[in-house]
Length: 219
Ligand code: SAH
Image 1 (cartoon, rainbow, N blue to C red):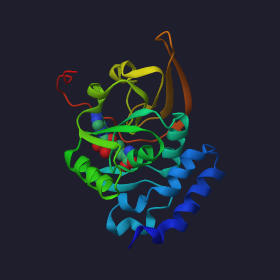
Image 2 (cartoon, rainbow, N blue to C red; image 1 turned 135 degrees about the vertical axis):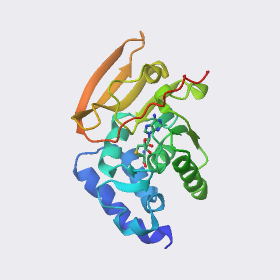
Image 3 (cartoon, protein in one colour; image 1 turned 60 degrees about the vertical axis):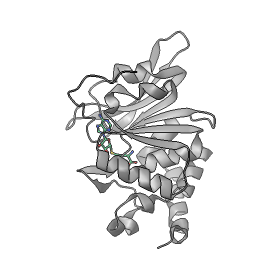
Image 4 (spheres, rainbow, N blue to C red; image 1 turned 45 degrees about the horizontal axis):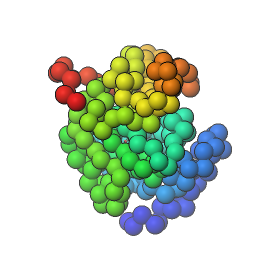
């Protein structure tokens, strides 16, 4: 089915998310533009605009649209920003980011998911999003620093490498907590003097950020 057929249902999803409190017009515009149905399994396309996670293979899920919107809004994204996403999964959040900012690097530890995400991004003609296969616990030092880093998997604590790779004024949005326990969406901001502020944005549920037992990559 061509993407155009989903445009009205996509707009309704964005309207529902707006009613739930997302105010950032650029986030809502991205939600109205990026075809979420292109990031889910063929058989799930009719469910693509329900506000819930869906399976994408490797026991992973494409995140619930409201939570993605909440993270994008919290990141205070500007058109000129360079953003890192950890946990690219289907590539949907990376595509939303690509619509909103100048440059996106997205890291995914499952090569099969990264390749599929890359294929979707390419097929949609999105040019400013690069997907790489790696353990995102170490960030992506090759392209650092970043104005914002969004993490789509829960960590026990904010990885030091991600805090280090924030530019002054940079925002890290990350779910913190155990795999099966309570998790909180946290926002860290790197102040000009190098210290960090931390704020809790509410309780969430994410798959775990899985650290591979290898040495960090060389920057
Ligand atoms: N943003 C994605 C959501 C994917 S779910 C989307 O829009 O579809 C979270 C993803 O994080 C999963 O694909 C999982 O494989 C990935 N992940 C978990 N630990 C990771 C790590 N250490 N480095 C990179 N990706 C990781």
